[in-house]
Length: 76
Image (cartoon, rainbow, N blue to C red; front, side, top):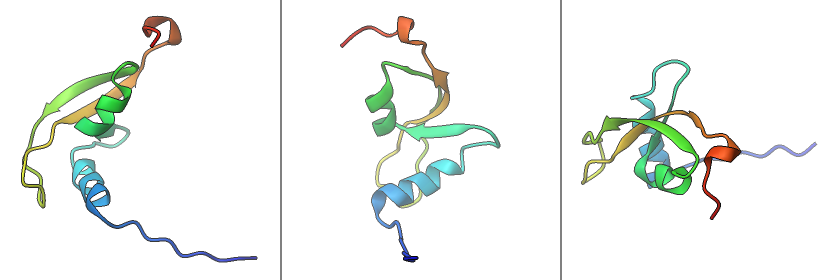
């Protein structure tokens, strides 16, 4: 058996840690860059653009409500 030890560091990890403070139990909160990647299928509720510790600019925050069905998505 091989044991591995992994660590996640950097700006993305810090942003994720800040975003999770806006999530209530059972919810998923995403930032603007993630929303941009999934906007065609994502159903979201905007939570505003709070200033987050360690970020020089405010970040748009969204509550991910769900994903659209395939027949509701425009083909790319």
